[in-house]
Image 1 (tube, rainbow, N blue to C red):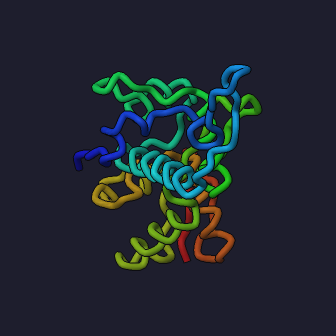
Image 2: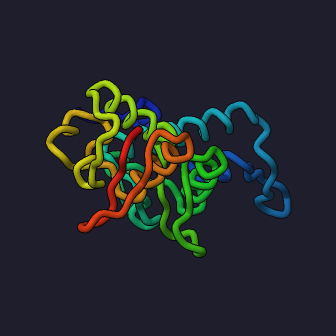
Length: 193
């Protein structure tokens, strides 16, 4: 599946700093003065577009974890063709908005790396359980590797799912009494009910 950038990505003002979202600089006799961006609707639309772009990009590239530095240098925030890069402070604003929406978790106290959840653990659990049910595999035991990398799941959206996210999805199923995470000789596994 190829990725097609949205129209905003080819629009240079899309890469303006967060000052365009939260504040505007205006000239006065004492120099530039910061004031709140008067058009809240425009600011919110731009933030929504960035959040959607991040989630779509990570989904299509099956990217689950990233550092802020990797994000800044990735094509996601760095349009080399336009020679425009979203400033670091603006990237932080976008990532924080994703965190508020439940699509991102910081992996360290310094907020230098993050887990991006373009699908929440409960949604992954639902997809996995639908596959289990559809294929008559209830009361079956799987290793985590079989679920995320096995031949049987190759055509499923959860194929290749990072282990930390897979565990969260299985924990959600366990809370619903649809699965139990178990310890096997060669690692962890899961039994579906």
